[in-house]
Image (tube, rainbow, N blue to C red; front, side):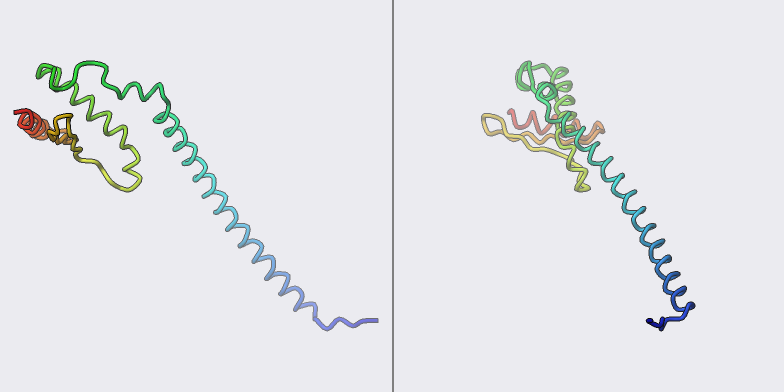
Length: 138
């Protein structure tokens, strides 16, 4: 017959220690599961955005189906520029994930003339944009 070398108190202490560790591990598991649920929701949202941005039907909205900028009146030019600015911001949606905000985009037309399109929203930015666009056309 074998004799038990551990006392009842030692066994109870080890049992309590294991129960505490199990409880602690359970709380950590719950935290990880919550983080996983949040990450899954973010991934689903990102996939929805990507599906929307990458769908061929939506990309048709970004294409200019009318006259080019140099062939329109000044009022149409302003409207087309606003649409272009909005489309640029939509197309560069991912930049915010880098904590970057696009402020301007430089284009070159078929003649090599630079057009600096500022994405600011105030009237000074629009005036600067008009000056730089028309200056490039001279």
